[in-house]
Image (cartoon, rainbow, N blue to C red; front, side, top):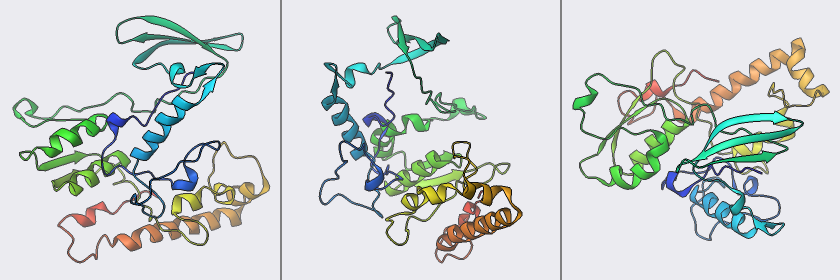
Length: 275
């Protein structure tokens, strides 16, 4: 089994929060407990508690005399992946250039589309004296650059969730932030309000139900009658279109992109076009 840890302490920062609440976090055999008095926002919490939970989990779980931590290969670069006779073979190279082979019956590729930082070149970049960093290094930068009294003007490029996280952290640390998003894109990421309704503690928890999953045309959904009704009938398609419009209105209303009193110039440009 090859495990990749995606919540390392080095990449975390003070205002990095989870999107899922406490009831959706942690494995079924060990609950994820948040310390009493820790800040909560509609049952979501600071991401550092996920890191602490995973660290404790891989140390305490032992299978066939081997802990989960000892099964994790750190600082490895995958060189080759092959499948022969139902068995995967992964060749890796460590930072000290040592090569090894890993064999497994199941393989999950979870590197994402942007695991390798992409830092674009800028005009006259050679005369720019302040640091230029990727979100992958923002955790360290939050403990160095954002603590530097000479670095209080921050510019963030991009409109995805990582950009949102960096903007929020920088503002909370007292910096003046300029957020640059290309005009050719679809604007910033959709900001879905955290509050939910009924027995659900936040909107993510509500959207994770089996019923709500039927609204998503996902290839992972079983071919059941309800998803077919929503996505393959004339009535269902009209209903889905009205739901998309309703969700857009639901997300726009609390933000008040064009009517918020006291908003800084350019705030209306955060009005997204995604749905």
